Structures are given as structure tokens and as C-alpha cells.
Length: 358
Image (tube, rainbow, N blue to C red):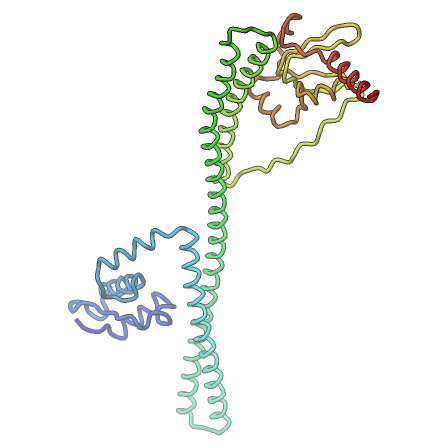
């Protein structure tokens, strides 16, 4: 084995302008059968330099080198970019020191050449001084070019680092959304079992009462509604997690409450079958339907959770499950689930008068 010639070392510096500044302590050797000017020697020399960047030396245990390689691969994108950015910033500091020294040397040699010219030095001496000055100028120019290229690389790495951090944050948010979905799916069967047991406690009882039958029917309806809403919400959350990872989520603004229309009615969504009297006619509407409700009955229906605004979050979910009820037939007059809004409003008024009298 022999030490690389000056020609090969010059080629190494041309292949990597920053190599001589940061890796000058690395040993570089080529095999005996390669000639100083052969491409094979140059290629082997560049490989040795590349390998030396993984463990700090050309030699060493190959198993250690392999483990170091896989440790680098195990880093997250943010860690990799931070590591590369730190190396580039350190290289820039070193290169800046060399550039300052080169510019100082250029100034000294320019001053020396000017002093020789003023002193009437011989041409041979002036030629040597000018040669030294041009060499220092070329060195400073080369280092300035390398500095500009390194600055561009640092800017590009900083942009990639910012993108990697944003992707990391999006992945963390998506993971939390997926955990929420898993928690909901684990809790849904427990709710289903509890609601089913509650219904069974009423329906399997030997005693039969109208209130208990209504209660069981309402609980079973709520159970089916919540289970359907659970499937829908989980699907929406999974879709949100996918969009979050891709970086194309849309932040929905909170809808403003709807105002009553000028004709004294409000467009709402029914949560239970309701009836009321209007213009001498009785109106009956199924649950899960859009309907214009008189403003005089709106507040009492909202307080008792029989209707809700169309822009309410639960209404938007229910409309995706049950629709808007456009093609539903009105409930029968003897339907036990019907809620008489007029009677409910009259009862509230009587209760308020009794409270005032007391």
C-alpha cells in the first residue's frame, strides 16, 4: 500500500470542495496496482472518502460500520434533517474562517505587490509577487463560490426541515384522531348492551304500563340512533385522519344560529313525532324530518328536545343517517309517540301561572 499522490489528493478536493476543510485528517489510500492518473484510483479514493463519513475513519470494524449505517437509517425525517443541518452549519463556520483568512492573505499579498512596484523591484520579483497575489485571489474566489453554494444548501435543508416538522405534527394529530375512533368503537358495544338491558327490564316485566312502554320505545330508538351515528362519526373521523396526514384538512367554522323567518315560522328538524294545530288544521310530522314550525311553539319544542336547528351538529349527522323526511307519510293520529306541542305549551303556561300565584 502507498499514500495517494498529490494529483489524486487534488482530484479529491475538486470532487468535494468542502472535503479538504472538514476531512483533511482522514487517511486516504489506494491499491498498489493503480497508477497515479488512472480513473480507477480516483474512483476508489472517492469511495474511501464517502465511507469515512459514516464512522470517522477509513478503517475500523465492518460490523460497527454497518450498525452505524442502520442507526442513521432509523432516525426520523426531522432528526435526519436536523443532523444534516447541524453538519452544514458547522461546515459553513469552518468555511467562513478559511474565507476570512484567504481574504486577509489576499490583502497582504496585494499590499506587498504594490510596495514592490513602488520600490522599483525587478520584473522577476514583481512576477512572483503577482503570481502569489493571483493565487490568493483565486483561492478567495473559490471559497466564496463554495460559501454561496453551501448557503443555498442550508436554505433548502431548512425548508425541508420545516416541511418534515409540519408532517410530524400532522401525523401526531392523525394518531390522536385514530385513538379517538378506537375508543369510540370500544365503548359502543358497552352502550348497546346497557341500553338493550334497560329496554329488556321494561319489556320483559309482567307489569305493563303505558309510561314504561313509551320509555322502552324511546330508549330503543335512541340506542339505534346512537349506534348509527357512531358508525357515521367513526367513518368521518377516519377520513379526517387521512386528510390530516395528507395536509389537506379544512377547518370548518362554527355555524351561526338560524333566525326565525319573517312569516312567523322557523325551519327545524324534528327529533320525535310531533303534532300541533295551525289555521284550524292539525299537522302531524314524523321524526327526522324538516318542517316549518310556528314561532310560538319553537321555544317549548327546543327546550324539550323535540326539534333542533338545521345547522346543529347532531342534526347534520341525523340527516345523513335518516334523511330529511320529504317522502315520509305523516304518523297516525293514535301513534303513542306523538308529542302534542300545543298541550306542552299550555302545560308550561299553567305551571308558570301557578308558580307566580304561589
